[in-house]
Image (tube, rainbow, N blue to C red; front, side, top):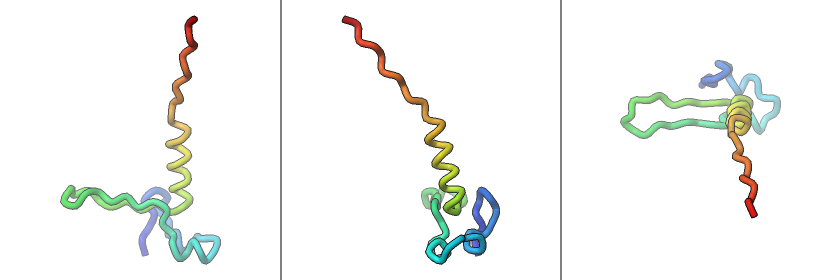
Length: 68
């Protein structure tokens, strides 16, 4: 059993349907070999939260008006 690193819950136990129980991990971050950093596993719910946070944090640069 692997626990989600963000919500600290077992994604298989809380999955609403069988297809999510077969592939419960949405995002698995694997650092380069030999880096000494741990792997991170996020369930689908937390993956969607992270993606939403990334998309809302993006600052869209407004186009500058053309001077004639």
